[in-house]
Image (cartoon, rainbow, N blue to C red; front, top):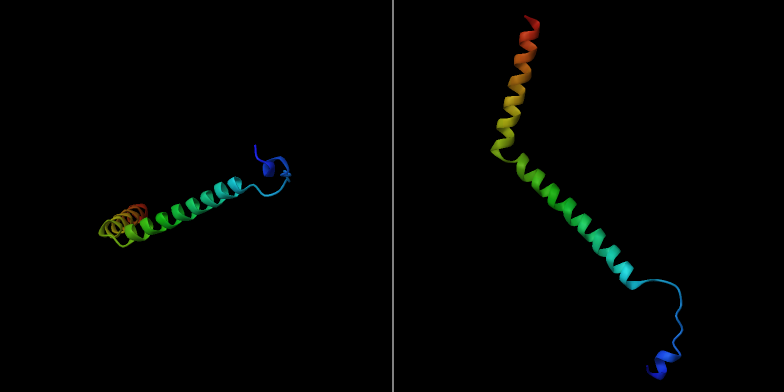
Length: 69
């Protein structure tokens, strides 16, 4: 132990490791949110979304038509 370490005073306050973990968690959350939004936009612009929308619309129209008869 050096002389500098002997005279060092431990003061309560900010914990840099805790702040780093917190920052990494927040960054990961933002990254996940961005990835999810990108995946949603990609799906909505795909032909599968159009076909799914058409099938659901046709199904609802069929159910309404059969209920009216």
